[in-house]
Length: 297
Image 1 (cartoon, rainbow, N blue to C red):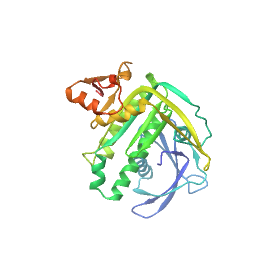
Image 2: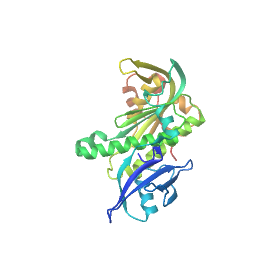
Image 3: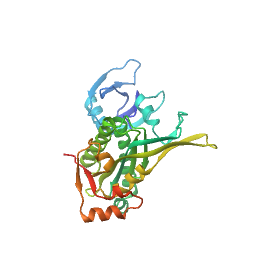
Image 4: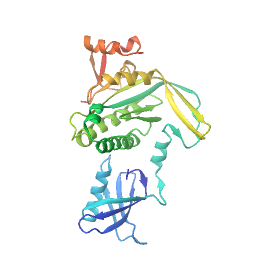
């Protein structure tokens, strides 16, 4: 991702003339993209372009074309002398592998907030498309989702990719964490519908958002000297199970979260809905009464 590092050096090539240029990219706190000449000791130019709140690589390249007044394509990303942005460090601290020697003491989070998202009809997509298309889509989906979480879900405690889905966890359920989780979901729904999934009409994103108890822990892999951290708990099981009942663009809630009054929702208590809930394994009785859907209006 071009948006992941400060002072990232790249090489672009003019598609018409073949001329190559080395550029230095950086993002300012307000989202402004700074594009500077990196081919000379003293930069020949510096351009500052205000980007959208959620820039993806294609937007960054478009901005570079605009700044250079020429059609260019990315040739190479150079990593020498790069420094990680503080937001990237924050993101790395929330990954399953601990590279900072943090300690996840055994902790119980009684009101954690869990967001589980999954791509609808991805199995069919796998069967109908070539390997290159599959790799391209899943890489774009996961990398852009992580960027979205790091930008809008900055208060989250943990995230984990799971194939064509993901789990994001906040240790506490409150107005801030709920707002962040909904912004992550809403933003990414709009992104995949308007851009990423647009060529594939049957693909869509859906999920579940619940609040419940989870257990936070860390283990050591002695041979590799790595530490792995994870969460377990009913809240995670519940989110992963009820999200399977959500259709494209839908987010299902549990009663604990709905009772906080922090999320607008609508209730579906038809026989079909109750029957589908009761067919799911491991759910508490109070979670099999009806389906609660986040109202995005």
